[in-house]
Each structure stands twice: as C-alpha cells, then as structure tokens.
Image 1 (cartoon, helix red, strand yellow):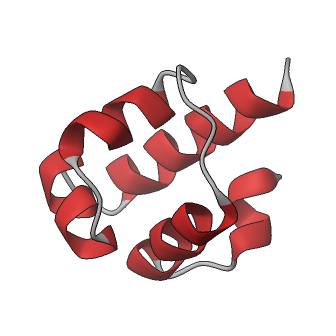
Image 2 (cartoon, one colour):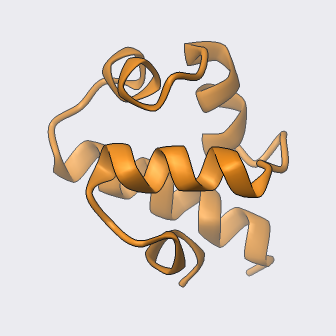
Length: 67
C-alpha cells in the first residue's frame, strides 16, 4: 500500500477509535472538515504543520500517523 494511503487510513482509524466525527477532529486540529475528508481519502497530501496539528488533536506523536 502506498504511504499516503496508509497515512490516510491511520488518521481515519485513530479518529474513529476516539469516537470523533470528522467535524470534531477538524475543529480540534484547526482545519476544515472538507480538508480532513480529503486527507482521509488520500486526495490531498498534508503539510508537516497539518500533521502536527492532527497528531496533537489525536493525542499521538506525528510518527504514529506515518506508521
């Protein structure tokens, strides 16, 4: 599987495990819900700063998103 697809699945999986909607995670991370949806479907490559925001909102290290 391509790295971007693995990352997209990891973000979605972590969000769902925490019982968060896309809207809730997007709000916590300070990004739009539409952008998060595009990340979760691997239609957009996130910047490092976006990965940091998502990791913080999910309570994990950035590396966890890239496993």
